[in-house]
Image (cartoon, rainbow, N blue to C red; front, top):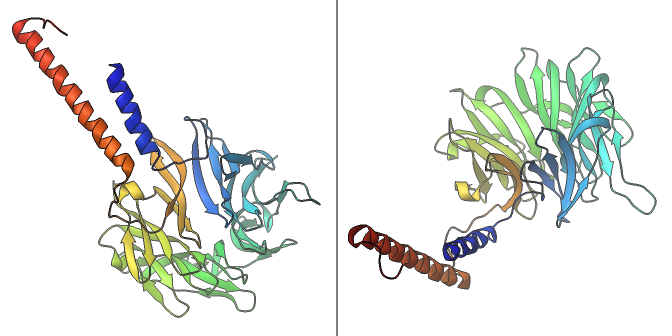
Length: 369
């Protein structure tokens, strides 16, 4: 029995060496990655077994807990090259508030700053650019919520498209913001907002509603839109027209969640009862990643080609980053021959034991057992 245990342990180690997930959290905890900066710092969250959420930055095995604004929970949604993080944190009154967290420098201690609201009680930070501008949404006095951009000094209300609500989901280094805003008829539309031109409706793929989720520095926008037949399709807006990426996918509802500087798009495909799949649209081609190479929750795609999000294994989420391109042709490694030899030994051991058990049952106990 010790022999077979040893062989199984080796096989597990071989598989574990191929991919590692999580922030080093305990087995009863979960983690999700939201963003990675060029230095490899990952912003996300760890969820405890009782559901408490903590915003964290993870780097090379080290976890930095960003704390809260006096409440119980927090989570991170974006990080820039300077290591400045945004997200949401509960304050002492248990209200969610958008925050800016900055790492320590020679002249500044690390810490979390409450970005305030637009007159209401709550707010959330969703995206941050390299200048430290933060986009998100905040409650207004009448109880609805509006998209905002915070420049480090004040929070600016971006308004709506004639309806009551709006929210921002992305911002590029020019300060252009994207998200979704309500029309006067109540339907939400993807929008682009600029400091000079204000908010512009990007339209739909023939349906009633749409939402933009990310924008790159050339102004390319991604998101999801309802189609004429009431399906959700991922889209790419090139500045003049909305391109239907979902039409390149055979089935399922698709949602684009990130775009990088090169225009590579990442997103997720959802089927009725099946696990979600990750897709990457790159160089004019749609690539759908197999389950073993995909993410259960897909977030952003970095300029160096990493797609961040989370696996779902063993009934828990684990933060994970994967390459945007997967080489499906397998290249043999020296360790594979060792694994093959161990498998042969395991099969031989099982056959020998089975034969001995058969002899025991038919002829009585073997002389050597």
